[in-house]
Length: 295
Image (cartoon, rainbow, N blue to C red; front, top):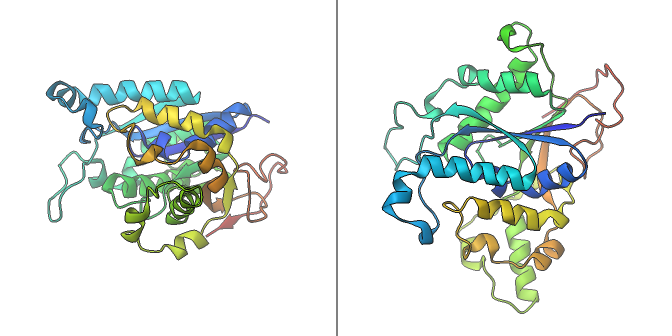
C-alpha cells in the first residue's frame, strides 16, 4: 500500500516547528509526505536578531519562500502553497487587514485544499486544534479551513471540477507543543545538573491538563530530532539558533520526551488508543470498511 500523509500549516516554518521529526520518521519509511502551507508569512517579523536588517525586512516574503524550499529539501517532503495572505498578529482591538487569510469564510477558503486532498488522496491529515495551538488568527483559521476541506473533499457536490471525492481515513490535531513536554524537558535538564531553560516560561503558562488528556497518539521519532533541528534552522529569519528551540541538548530531549504527540479526531478505520503510529489501522484496513471514529 502506498502511504500518504498531508500536513496543513498556516505559515512557512510551522512544518518544521510542529511535527517535523514525525515527518522525517515517516519519510524514512517511504511514506509520501506533502505539506500544504496556507500563507506565505508575508506579515511576519524577523525573529533572528542576527538577520534584522532593512534589506531582509524588505525582502521577507521572498526569503521565507526560499527558506521553505530548503526546509522541504531537508525533510524530503513535497510542499504546496494554498496562496493566501498572512493575517499578521494584530494588537488587541486592531482589525485584520482586508486581504487577511483569517478574514475569509472557511467554507470558501477550503477550495484549494480540497483540490490538494483529492489529488494527493492522503490516508492521514494533520492540522491544528480549534485553538490553533496558540491564538494566532491564521492558526485558528487553518483549523477551520482544514476541517471544512476534509468534509468538502468527501462531498461529490462540492467543487466536482477538482476531482473525485476522497474521504480522509484519519484526521489528527498536532499537539506537539504542549506544556507537559516542556515541563518534562525542563525537569530533565535540572536532573542532569544543567540550567532549567523553561522555568520562567512555565510559570507564565497555565496548566493544560485538558490538553494533555486529549493526547491519543505518540509517535516515537526521537531519532529524527536532529533532522527537525536542521529544518528549523533553514528558516533563518524565523529561528534564532541561540534561542530556546535549541536550549535542551538532543540526548536529553530523546530521553526526556522521545515522541511527538497528536489527538486523533476522526477515523474510518478501527483504532486502539493510545497509538504510536498515525497509520495504525490504515496499513491493514479492509477495503470499504464502514467503521468510524469521531470526537
